[in-house]
Amino acid sequence: MLDDINAAMEVGTSDAVKVWMNWMSIVFIASLIFVWKYKPARWVLAALIATMIGAVIVWTLTRNIHLLGIVHLIVWLPLAIYLWKSVLSNSAKTSLAESPSLYDRSFFIWICLLFATIVISLIFDVRDIFLVMQGMK
Image (cartoon, rainbow, N blue to C red; front, side):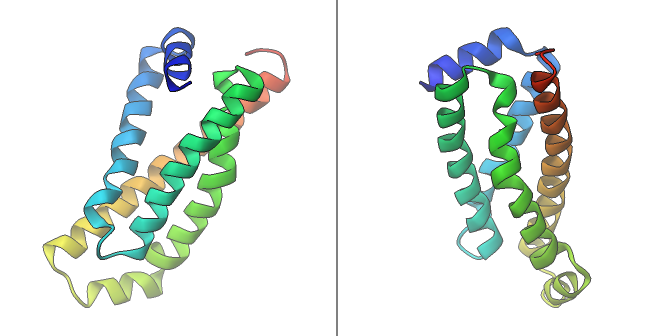
């Protein structure tokens, strides 16, 4: 099943999209570096697993790679809100700054990169879903 999805992505997406997909994978998999200490990293890893399962379900039902963004909207939008409230808000930044080890700073930088990646991806996902609904993809 994953081979089918990968084959469809290879044929149906541009090189720029493939690079972006690799970036997203790296940023999400980087959660493994932080799961032992940070609860948000555990939620990110859970979201990655849920996204993979959801992608298989959407692919099975639609056979349209441009609709995989539905899974991102369902899983990543709540994740982004959670990350904003638990890590990126002023109160969370203040508590994180109290122990400014290199590891803690690395975690915060990773969350910032992840959050930006999620927001950008959601924008593209909404666009793709709209285009599919208009019959353009």
